[in-house]
Image (cartoon, rainbow, N blue to C red; front, top):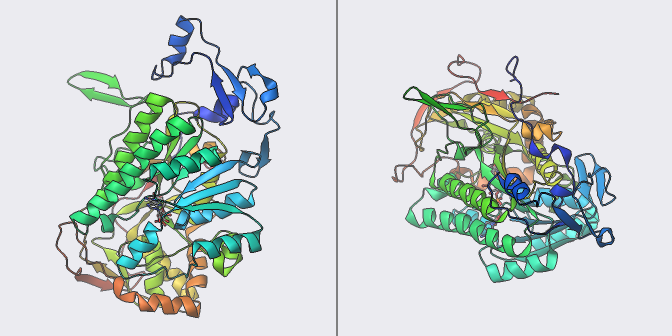
Length: 513
Ligand SMILES: NC(=O)c1ccc[n+]([C@@H]2O[C@H](COP(=O)([O-])OP(=O)(O)OC[C@H]3O[C@@H](n4cnc5c(N)ncnc54)[C@H](O)[C@@H]3O)[C@@H](O)[C@H]2O)c1
């Protein structure tokens, strides 16, 4: 929804995309980056204002001022997602995952040179919980073969833990990526709440993995942009209704106290994580923020909404190219689980009041957002946050939408409210700003109903339906935030369309044009 008279209150830094943004530019001279936003002043004070560069891709240019725009530079080619470096070298950490694999195929098809690592943590965690991806996925070797055969693309893969810094160092030195997309974390709130062992494993994996990566980037690829995945769960749901700005307060945000006032502009907004997993993401945020400050690394921290869906042209191009799809309590995301429950003829399970509002985005749109960020690298030292979201939905409304689409497939379903296993606000306002991705040209292409329809089309195939049936006992949550292990009780079962809409509505500030 767009509020009347709403104007984006910030201009995104990178609008003018020049060599200054380009990962191929090697900064030259006595550049002191530690000025924390005052560097220009510091540099002009010592008469050192003109930063010179050398281009790693065009050494014949010698030293020059970084003013060539992407449009002017023959190394940057126009694509429908913006300009991309020719054969841009992109490393995807967590390439075997739901998003990593999908992004890898799309970028490879666009002509980028893709490398990636994964240690199969996700496959192992899902197996440990007794589940499987209901959309069958083949081994990485088979995936790579299929990518070559069906899409004609080659991907350079290494099985490796991101925390194995020796191995990662070698791989970074070899590949010299011009952008790094960091997906390699354990992405489950309930998994992090099982017990101390799991909470520690999630934080160790996520926090230390990112921290080690930052040190390696400083030494090996300091000009490379890091696109790090955060989540909306970092922000929580402020009960005051304070808008969720894009991670950093805008300049006109004011703190008033004791008859005095201050601008909050430029400060990180408060984080209020909602599980030990989300705490790990907040720690990641601070580590990346600091690294950008200390070493002038360039980074986008992507506060990503909950992803749903199965489709991009590339993953749909062959059965061995499909990305994973989980429906269990731990790794299934909400829309994906609702559709699977419906196909099983089971009621859709909504936790608590179902009035919780969350941020969402379809798989295909999320992948496009990532490409637009790669195509618009941050400046040296720029730590920026983007809110990646196309819709705010109440869980109850999502259940209604899934039930509505199910009807088109001849399936009638009920909605079941369960005792909430989580400790979270069940009724709250939610106002979100998301203007930076639209500033980079992103417009949502996939409606909620369209993607839910695509999920039904895929999941109702007999082989997949059978795989859902085998794991249907894992739908009902047994992990609670209080630490008790018990199955959530049913609070109410009702027919879709019989509940009155009430309470708050999510407000999303997103320019449409
Ligand atoms: N899917 C969503 O709805 C969603 C929403 C918000 C944020 N995110 C974030 O996006 C990222 C990717 O999410 P996803 O859904 O693709 O998850 P995923 O689990 O499918 O992908 C992560 C991949 O990283 C790998 N990995 C994990 N730890 C690793 C390690 N130490 N070394 C090497 N590889 C490792 C896993 O094996 C997996 O293949 C995560 O950081 C997640 O927190 C996801």
